[in-house]
Image 1 (tube, rainbow, N blue to C red):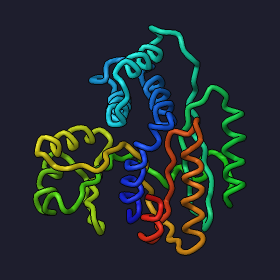
Image 2 (image 1 turned 90 degrees about the horizontal axis):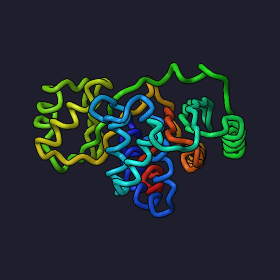
Image 3 (image 1 turned 180 degrees about the vertical axis):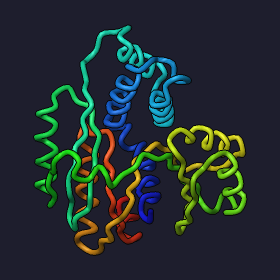
Image 4 (image 1 turned 120 degrees about the vertical axis):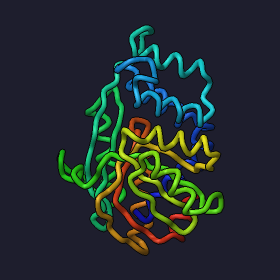
Amino acid sequence: MSGHSKWATIKHKKAATDAKRGQLFTKLIKEITIAARNGGNPENNPRLRVAIDHAKGANMPSDNIDRAIKKGTGELPGVVYEEISLEGYGPGGVAIFLEGVTDNKNRTTSEVRNIFSKKGGNLAGQGSVSWIFEKKGYIVVPKNSISEDKLMSIALDVGAEDMTTEDEEYAVKTAPQDFFQVKKALEDAKVQIDSAELTMLPKNTVKLAGEDARKILELVSSLEEHEDVQNVYANFDVPDEILKAQE
């Protein structure tokens, strides 16, 4: 999973800038609205709970969160959104799987296809790359905040599946259903968390360097900036210095 924890942390740091542009708020509102269709109580709706946590982390006003929930449950009128997933390949044969929320599936698909084409990739059919990814909880902790043994003891005791060590971070992986209890245990132990997400992790990675590495990050960033794209997952493994240049 080399590369994923750094990319997750970089995206987390970028959130403040995105929020100033309003882009992040728009995406979070869409996610809350979609998630609330399965019930407006976050205690009984894990997806809504994650969406609300992300919104609060981005300093979204509670009124905005409440309105988005009510639009999802039907208590307030709102735009009718549908969820979409698209798959493709980037430079170097990197697999890319993205999730979106849109009010016009054909428009979004066309615009995403155009981004792939312009950035050296191509959109592929359903099922082309989705099998490479699996749903997991993923928590990134800075190494300078806690010892490896202590973190491992806390995380594994409450159900974490695995923990890996990167240059500057620890990455804790969980089954989706165990994500919240592991995250809460770390928070209760006052462990510093750089990012925590329910995500799609690749089963294998593609090592890239040089121009291909820069191109794949440009493609992924361009896809993430599209207003209808909620999440982009890719199985790239690129050098640290190129990742850090994205900060």
